[in-house]
Length: 133
Image (cartoon, rainbow, N blue to C red; front, top):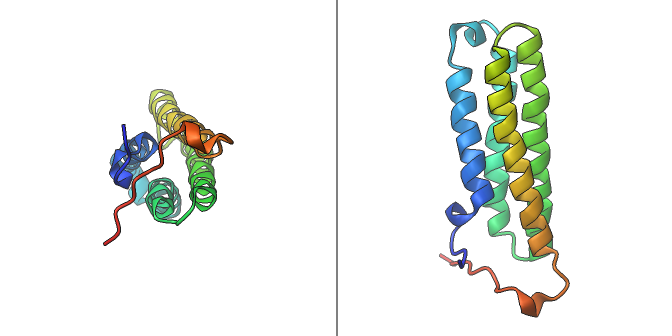
């Protein structure tokens, strides 16, 4: 499948799911009292999604891979903040496991895409099609 827009990227779709789930989780009453942690979780999950989109128009595979690595670090940041939420009793173990797993899926998809972009035999893979406005 040819990627013609950032919305076609599986890692972006997974990071969007992560963002939606983080927003749902942090909309609870307990997070209203912990605005700092709520903000950190939301910013990190948004960064994971946004950096994939931003990197899509970066201009080169190497630059795109740099943005993807930033996105992967943001997903890791979400995982770290989830420990804070769990340790403070803001979320259940089941919620932690579910969101941690979604973040892990995001990281795996990003890692696979970085490997794809880094292939040495560029003739063997089709180029991404980027539309210019």
